[in-house]
Image 1 (cartoon, rainbow, N blue to C red):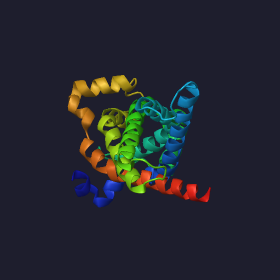
Image 2: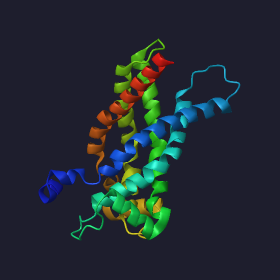
Image 3: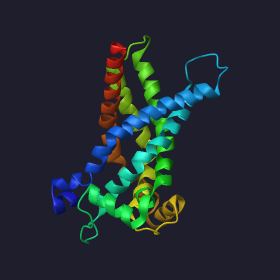
Image 4: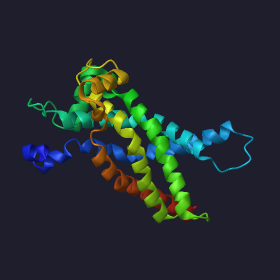
Length: 240
């Protein structure tokens, strides 16, 4: 409400251009990396007796998917966080948009500046993606039952639940990541230093800021992502 009073409803959408541009390659890279992770599991278990992966193996493939995806996620979210937080302390805004912010960060600190918070991003996304894809696979199979055809309805609901599963555990490292990315260079020594100082100064509850909105957003956003994936797969199966 403070943001709305201060800047109007437009303030709620500050910094949205970066994720809007990055979300498609991010999801594409995530799904591709998940497929690669599954192939790595098969390659590591040549003597397996079943082609069906276990939930642990899905978790390993899901956790792996976060590593390549971080290449896109970290700079995208770094720019978004800086744009969202600039001016909130009463100072003048430093950047005029996504491209201006990205160029300025690169000039100030090179790729290291754009990729600040990489460790925190991995701390969020490796376990988060493991939970994400396990939840999807379990719910999808439970809803779909037997059969080889893709069920878009099952994919939509399972995708939404996958998002809820991920953000149920990803909020604390996400809060730390955002704090590191928004702070001036050198403020924190690393992920653990930031988390420890937050808990000491603001209490454990500080690590769960934004949990409610994240869970409300998680279901529709990820249901839509998996719906798109299911429709694309169904279309490709019909063509080929």
